[in-house]
Length: 413
Image 1 (tube, rainbow, N blue to C red):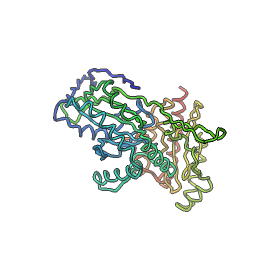
Image 2 (image 1 turned 90 degrees about the vertical axis):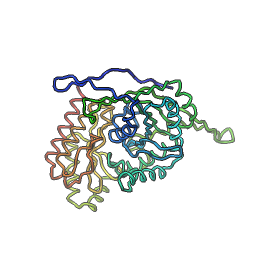
Image 3 (image 1 turned 45 degrees about the vertical axis):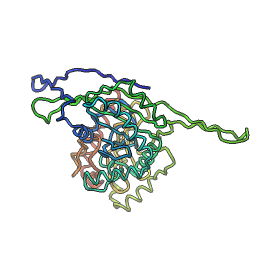
Image 4 (image 1 turned 180 degrees about the vertical axis):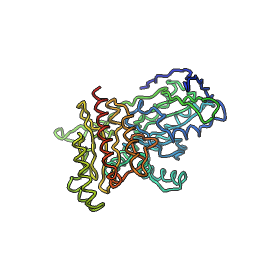
């Protein structure tokens, strides 16, 4: 099924210092506007892409590579979500009308090539990219950790989900360009070639405007032109020979969705006693005493403690009683503390993301060497130590209390 986006044209105006500035549209036909500029833009600022409107499970986008080689060519931009969903982006400036049809088939070929990969295959290509781009041998997991903290259990789930999604071809394919004129009817021919892949394909137009005379000031307006709706496909297996032994097993592409609950699956959760024993072994008794105090004080504020396989999370139950819990802090057994991923919960509860952005900025300001993440603004740029956190504890707990109160007020109107 194909779904058209809410596409419309219009001239933007910028109000600045009491005056109106009319940005100038940069024509997609000029040679001085390279596709590489668009690739760098998306790699550095993936939030430009309206992925939340297309497939929410693929958000937020974490950039893991550019020009990633596959048998059919190279993927312009490659992203992954913290839950292990991969997004392929092909950028295109439509100077050549013949390329409009070809690019759809091209990105599908890339998807088919990736669907033959194992997790190790993908990890090796990310390492090759990182070696060339940064001079360091960094794999997929460590690349993701630069943007989003993963504890031990989350790391295992991430690897499992990436492997499953590769094997099933469960991918988000985005064709991004300026001046897209591809018709829905022309896309159908290409989509029918790959019924075995569980992908979603979308066309996104980026309108680029020059603001004033400064070439560094540009206004980018993304528009979802059209997208496919994934249709559930099923395989019915008949097992057994004798009538009394016959059983039907139905497999659908819905099985590709990983369980959302952090407590689901067969992984073993650590007990409080085991956690504190390991924390004491790693960081000493003072860290244990402080972690216990943090739990007591946060529970007194209304947070709940959730035990993971190698860490605990402090989460705020939805004040409206939906059952969702908003992540606030995670503490692992090696003595590190980091912010809980709250964006997904806040979005589901239709609460402003600025609440988590402000919380991340305020808490980061108290910790040495910690900054608010430039892309994932609801997180820090790296883990903090319990020791550094403890030195600012009184101010921290006040910020936590204020954060909880803001969420409650926003929830209850």
